[in-house]
Image (cartoon, rainbow, N blue to C red; front, top):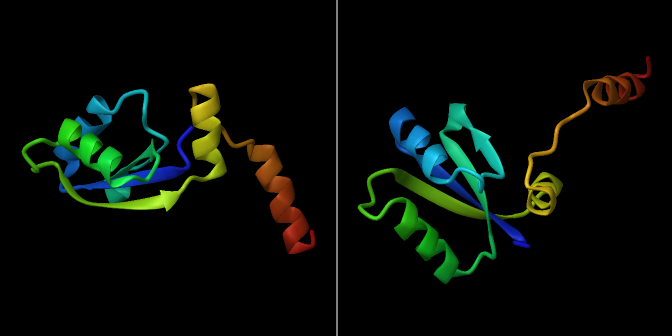
Length: 101
């Protein structure tokens, strides 16, 4: 299991959509408004370079990237093969407790 997440920032909507297509089944996080896709990685330069070469061999899709410590959602995806889903009722009760309602 990867202990890091590689966040890839794309230069536009078309590149973002292409990235989602090419990374299907490996995406641990996505944010269309920021044109960012996260994928699990071990954080090594060799693995990051390999993934960038596979995804964007002509360096035209990805405009920047960063490596972060994996979140619990990333770990859940790695273990189950599916993204975690938030329970809306759970979030509502947490908000009420915080607000003192």
